[in-house]
Amino acid sequence: MSARTIISTGMAVALLCGATHDTNADIWMKGSGADADQTIYFQDSAVTTTNYIRWDDLRTDICAPTADIDSAFVWNITDNVDSGWIFTNGTDPEFHLDNIGNLGLDGSVTEFDSCDLAETFFAVETLEPGTVVSLDVNLPEGVRSATSAYDDTVVGVVSTKPGFLMGGPRADAYPFIRERLTLQQGNTDDPTVAQRLQELEEILDNWPRGDVNVALAGRVPVKVDASYGSIEPGDPLTSSPTPGHAMKATRPGTIIGMALSGLESGQGEVLVFPSLRYHVPHGYPSGAVEAGELTTRQEDRIAALEQENARLKERLAEIEAVLKQLAAR
Image (cartoon, rainbow, N blue to C red):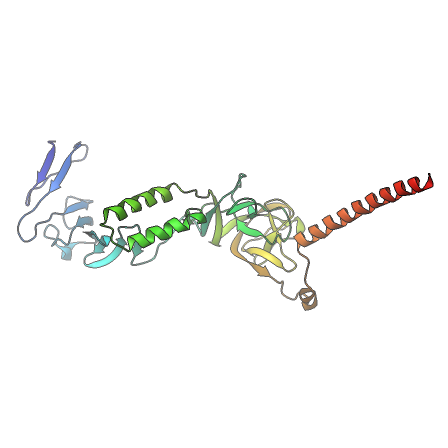
């Protein structure tokens, strides 16, 4: 083709099966008169009354009478400098992508291949899907494999394949995000503002983002260890002493969610409805709750203090023995 191919009103170009039409330049479709735009049709037959997809800009359909069409999908696309791209089916707006990246839909988004909503976190270790994770206090916005029962810093479970993933920058980017939002609401035609917006876009595009997807809601497979008790649908699950595995919660503590499937014994996976919260088992003695159950971390701390106390007693005994020897001389 030439450097520019111009297709005028009333002119038809047939792209036959097996034919090749290559161009590394522009293809223009130009019209004249009251209806001075053109239309691109995608049909599954040479007959104009069959199903088709049409892409145009509020064009009167003169090529394929709509009364005779079995079904049709028509995108009318409006490019607005201030509001972005607006896609309409006929005259009804269905989809809006504005000029700063916000997306609007006149309907619902359906994910057919996955069942959970997840958010990215950071980790220094490799965490497999289904792993129960806790907060890593040494890593900002980080997680690690959970290693203790009823861990009150448990975060959730690593998603296998998120249907929807929130992968924003690390939270320390928020000052730049707020600055960008403020500038976008002002005079973006100002060259200084436009330059700063470009700088902020580059900064935020390269800001650290997590690579571990932790499920927040929906349904997700979770590694479990049923050696601490068989798991049935409806059971609350918490972290277990087996690294990265959940177990049935039988006393008050933080749980990661509710089992949707079961496991009689051993280690395996069950489907879980994530719901991170503090849980008190039904029928649990109220006195025990009021008195306050010791969490695993508190028990570990007490054990560490008892060990330290024993070492101090041994050291004191050694000092007393030396003093007795000195007094005997």
